[in-house]
Image 1 (tube, helix red, strand yellow):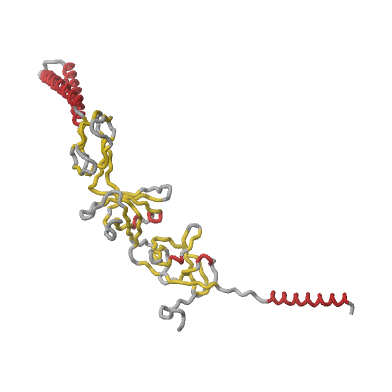
Image 2 (image 1 turned 45 degrees about the horizontal axis):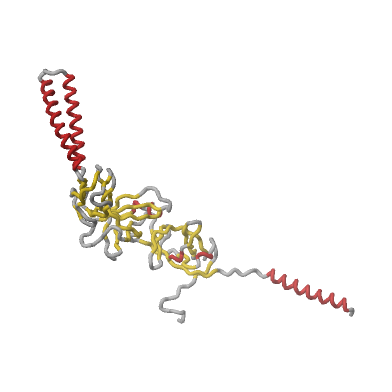
Length: 359
């Protein structure tokens, strides 16, 4: 047989064999292997929920005190850190010039007042014209206003405490000259404290369900200190947080002070939609929203279900707000690789008494 003819027959046989193999492969249908998933059951949450935020103790009033008159400081009657009572004289301006001004005005006040009173009395007796009466009344009012202005200036040379509290800072020393309105001392009010926190919008929209507020100071762990809600901003800041202010009455047996760190807890009751408990591993995010995969036991497929996170627990459980019923089966692991409507196989849970599946 010719060598060329033999080569042609050889390649024809090989080509036919390859065509047969490919045709057999095309005729064999592809095998779809369902993904194996771990599942858990949803538990209904019946109790109260709470959320905790970091905060700091703040003095209810931290004010800077200034004289209403100018002059050299004569003396300070208190020291930094000293506790003072409302009305106590804290510092004094040298009253010399104000006393001279007051004495001169007082003498004039007494003279003008006496003369005006005589004219007014004569007018009531029909002895002087109405023009003299009007001048007497105006003069008396004018000197009275000047007298009381100079009396107030003399009294204002003494700086008094506006409330009970502690001297925080001293900005000047004795004999220094200060202007009107220049702060010379600062005071903090220790009758009660304020505690400020920032809450996210997810808690702000549930503000009608707020039920109880308390805080725990870092220096007194485990001691719950009740709080009173003062106010809450109605507009979020640049970080989408809302500021909440609380009032805290100082406990007599606790040595608390402004600047200490606390953990503020807000307790609230469940909303009308109800709350459920799911594993944190069952949650996944899509377009900034939280979901879980619900497992259809009849069709053995999974479907997306939206949830709203309410509170995270340290044991790996999450309280969510949703319409999931108690006992609903959800995927608890491998959630990011699934697709809506995908067929899956449920991993049979191992009994706690059969570790390793040896029985």
